[in-house]
Image (cartoon, rainbow, N blue to C red):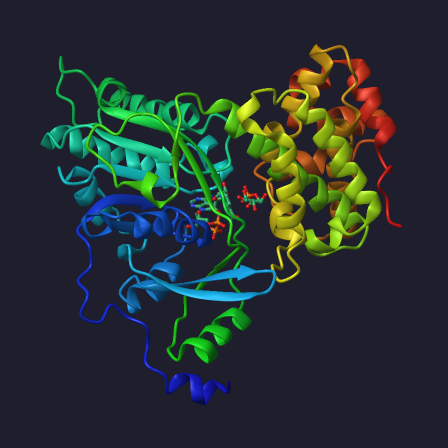
Length: 451
Ligand SMILES: NC(=O)c1ccc[n+]([C@@H]2O[C@H](COP(=O)([O-])OP(=O)(O)OC[C@H]3O[C@@H](n4cnc5c(N)ncnc54)[C@H](O)[C@@H]3O)[C@@H](O)[C@H]2O)c1
Ligand SMILES: O=P(O)(O)OC[C@@H](O)[C@@H](O)[C@H](O)[C@H](O)CO
């Protein structure tokens, strides 16, 4: 369809259907939020009572685009045999993250029951005043002052023990506001950190739905197939999974009727997903790009990459023993999901923030293998592939994103085993302190080199 023909189409919007009232605040209005939490909320039987106000993190663009179409967008469910289009209406407001006045107003409102987060792994370690979690804290300070009551914070980032990590980050920032006298608590009154400990429930989750970045072709396809203009469609695989553990003191949508699962203990499910799916993704991101591949499906079709993945899964599986995890079925399903030829999931996107991701995807498996008296070669190979990848990227001046980028670049300047030790220390200081691990990883450097 030509650009002129597209412009003549009506813009997607809400029509006569009113927006649901805002009861959920989301931080990190990106692709995944729209394919996952917003989609589950739209599918809940009580969707009409649960609207989302979704805030961007760093730039206003996504909010402006979505606000122009009243928060409504198309989910393109991309199966191996074709696309299915669905209009999602659960986002009642799309807001620029810099609009902290609106954020604080909504966080203070007694009707707000839930805050969901997809702000990326690295943000939980950030302490600057503009970080999404610092903004959340200032909103919680106002909620405390105005008596808005308890609520739930639900991290939906690929972070190990994401509920506890979110709690620690928010409490740390709240303590800083208390110490600076900026939390609004009068002298002698319990501070914000204490209020957070007593009133905010941090829910742990395992979240899963492969959602690559939307392309211009996706936008054009929606116009051609749906007969309207949507500048903010999102593409995702048909599979969607959400497992949660924790309390919702102010209520929640009936997500279980939309397919979500509530469990007592999140850790085994989280490990299964972070190690098997995300671990394989990281391995493919580094080994696959070194071998000239651009997407997950391409890399998996390379027998060298495939056998590295299978070997890593064998190691990880030894520590996923709960019968209901059904690891064999999970692995078989992953192979099908990764091979979906119509999902172009770019390895360059997955490769970002390696130091943070490997800490959760490779290090726990390597540590568990060592504790069991084994070497953990396949997990060590993932770390070695990352080292090769950043060394090549630094040497060729190619951009790579990492919260410890400057330290990575300094470590890459070193020679031989010292380079391996310094890079390993950025992923795991404990493992870098063990000579046998440094030796092992060093010996694996170059082992997945270009074909
Ligand atoms: N895309 C997926 O397939 C997928 C699946 C499961 C989980 N996740 C989780 O969701 C997260 C977001 O994924 P996405 O695909 O929506 O990414 P995205 O890039 O589309 O959106 C990320 C959001 O986080 C914000 N953000 C990122 N870095 C920030 C920073 N330093 N400071 C402030 N805000 C920042 C961005 O502005 C944006 O609003 C991932 O990091 C991952 O933890 C993604
Ligand atoms: O989103 P990230 O950057 O944490 O990780 C990249 C991918 O591994 C990830 O997005 C997966 O596709 C996703 O976790 C599948 O549910």
